[in-house]
Amino acid sequence: MFQLNLYTLILLASVLFTSCASLSNNELMSKQTVLVDSIPQNADIFYNGELIGSTPMELSLATGIAHKVTLKKEGFKNQTGYFNPSSHNQKKHFLKLGLVQDLGYYYALTPEQIVMELEWDLLPSTLGITPFISMGDLTNKADKMFESGVVSEEDYRIIINQIVDFFSSY
Figure (cartoon, rainbow, N blue to C red):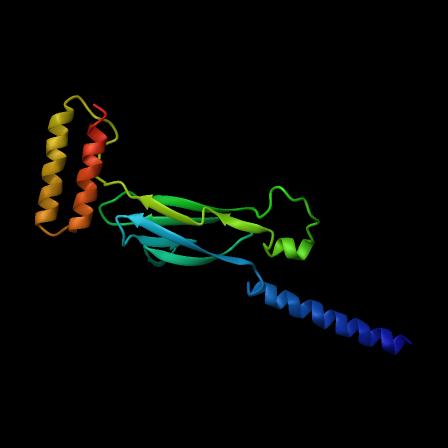
């Protein structure tokens, strides 16, 4: 009788420790594919402080925790976005079991995609005393950057639109 209990205990312990090893590898976590994009595109994507690619890019992320994504592109201000877990079913109340809940199976990440518009570095924070002179100066800088090949045509269009939008409130 004692020997049968010992075998049962060893079998149970091996099953429990095997599952813990799998959990540490993150293989059992519920995951969701999300999209990270930017305007302009080709911004570097940093996740957990590491460069993982450039926009646009699909990521497979665990659904049970929040995720922070930072976009960086030379000549533009950095932008940060978040994917947050939200309950799958807000209307239905059901029993949530510990391990299944811990693995994120009751959650979905929101939003499913993030598209961040990166703001041009040289865009001021206020209009200033002479906004039309400032607008002309910024437009000239953008023109020179485009002509010298520092920014692409797509980036140039975005920069000009941002200048016009910024000063249109005057």
